[in-house]
Every structure is written in C-alpha cells, then in structure tokens.
Image (cartoon, rainbow, N blue to C red; front, side):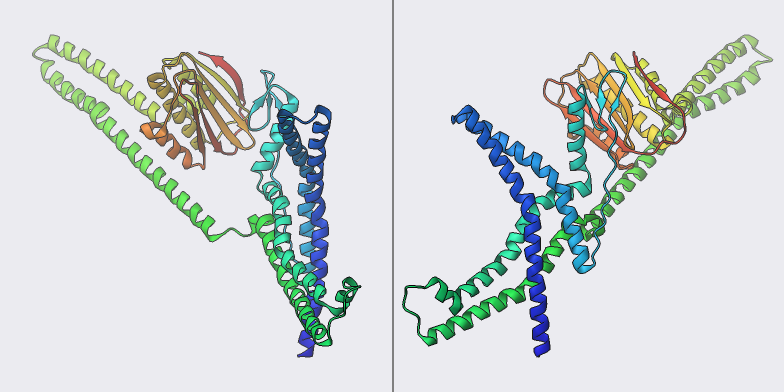
Length: 457
C-alpha cells in the first residue's frame, strides 16, 4: 500500500513538473502575439490621438500585429509539443508538409501562385503562403494548435493549480505568515486546516497525471490527424466512392443506350434501306436500266449520309482530334464551331491521361453549349492549365449570370462526371454576370507532348 502511494505521489510530482514546463513553453506563443497586437494598437492611438475612427484603426492594427507575430510561433509551438510528448511518453507524431508550388510568370505578365493569378509578385507571395497554409493539413493543424494549446492548458492545469493553491492556503504555516497581527487560531482549527490543506494538495497531485495524459490526447488529435482517421471519415469516404462509382456506371449505361439508339435509328436504318435498294436495282438491271441508275444514285447518297452519321457518332464517343492532338487542340476545334466568339488559352506541358482529357473535353462542350443557349453572352474565355498536380479549366462568359445546377441537368451531369475523378466544380455567377465556372481534376501527366498557346476564334 505504501509503495503504491509513493508511486502515485512520484508520478503526480513528475506530472506537476511537466504541467509547469508545458505552461512555460506555451506562454510565449500566446502572450507575445497579444503583447505585439496591444503595442501596435497603442502606437496607432498615440500617433493619431483617440477618436472613434482611430480606435477602429487601432483595433485593425492590433489584430494584424497579433496575426503576424503569431505566425512566427505556429511551427515553433507545434514542434515543441511534439518533442515533449515524444520525450515523456515515447509517442511520435511525424509531420509531412504538403509541397508549395513555385511562383511562375506567364506569357501575359501575371504571377501564378498555383491557385490564382496576380499582377504583383509580393501580393502573389502573400496569397500563396496564406492559401497553402490553410490548405495544407499539417499546417492547418499547427495553426489550430496555437489557439487550442493555451485553452487546453487552462482547462486541464487550472483545476490542478486551484487545488494546490487552495490547499496551501489552508496550511497552518501559511495561515501564520499571512495572519500576523491577528490572534492565533486554536489547536483544533489548526489541525482541521492542516487536514483539509493536505487533502486538497494530495488531490491536486493525484489529478496532475490525468491532466497531462488528457493534454497529450488533445495534442494528438490536433497535430496527428493523419494518424487517426476516424470511423466517420472512412464512412463518408466509402459513401462518396460508392456514389461516384454508381454515377460512373449509370453514365456508362446511358451512353451505351444512346449509341445503340443512334445506330438503330440512324446508320442501321440507312444500311437496311440501301440493301433493299440494291436488291431492287438487281431486278431492274435487265428491264429498266434508267430506273436502276436513279436508284443507284439514291443508294450512293444514302451511303454517304450513313457514313457521315457514323462519323458523327464516333466523334460523339471520342473525337479523333482529341485522341490524336490532345485536349488543347480539341478545345480549339470545338471553339471554331461555337456560336459565340471564344478565346482559348492552353498551358499543358504534357499530354493528360485519356479519361481525364475526355471528361474535361465533354464538360467544356456542355459549358459552351450552356453559354450559347442561356447566358446571352457576347464573348467566352476558356483557360486550360496544369498546375500542382491538377488540371484546372476555367470557362468565363460576360452574360447575365445566375448559373444554378439545380435548374438543369447539365451542370449536375458535369459534377457527376468530375466526381468519378475526385474533381471539383466551382461556380461563381452573380446576377448580371459575369459567370466563371472552374473545373479541377487531380491527375498525372502521361506523355511528353507540349501544348502551350492561346487562340481567339
């Protein structure tokens, strides 16, 4: 019994030391940014004097100063927590930061951040850093930890500190120190205070290990998100894959039915008619050669129409220009037949996988058809880019806007088509226009064929 009590007290003492170390290491990441924000706001008030507008400006300056200084502590605070957890409990929390694309200057003089274009290189650097920081899972967890860390310490170490301080207050020696000049309490009260004080201190010591373990659990949940995919996350992912697979199978079945219908009602019917015409010509060759020649001319015209229908059908399945020349040239060819003037800009260093090219091509077909039918636009712009492992297609028109997937099947069909590749459809369409629709498909390049140019059709 004594050994267990000693072990518990020893573990509690170690936990108290660890809690103190955690509080000391967390303080700079919390207090320094607040102090920097307060100094920035105070400087603004001192320079411009105190008015209502200056108070607002000081608040903005304070928040900006806090954010800038806090950014310097994000990775440092997270790394310190990882080292402490590994040293104390042997729990490793490996971190892998996502790649950050280099800034690129395109032919139009704009800086490409990997997500958007900017004329200023400085603005592009800031936007790229912020966008990457909030998109990268590890960095996002570290930013969250900068706020969770002091809150977790306050919630977990606060009760321990309260018990220790309250117990110390009840100890007779402390009562003597703070009670000078007052009559000493009677021995019974001193014994009672001693018992209460020791009980509270003992409760704080015994509670400390649980507080440290709870802190480690919180740290792992925030900083080691990749290592513990929850059942709910896996369930959502399985549901998403099941839905996209069902959409892909349904679209494939619908496409096969369309091809069968087009063959049955078009080329097949014409070929059957040509066969019957040739049979009639065979009987007329000896009796009425003039009528036979007329039927031969009709059969030749029917065969040409059947051949054209077959070519159109093949083009609808997979355009030859897409298979031979790639997505860029296929979209330029498509723009030539578009009812609206269309400017196409393509920046593809290599050929994309054929399924991705087909999905992007038919999505662009649908978007151009929608723009011609519904947008009342005078100009359409198509940008096709490959950046940071994703194909990004942006279709913009200067029409009336208000594109809504719920009002038709076209945009919903594009969403289903992109969902098969884990792609994303983004719509920016306000009343009065313009409308910008962005397609993003993660993919890898397949063959070294360069296509980088722009064209206006």
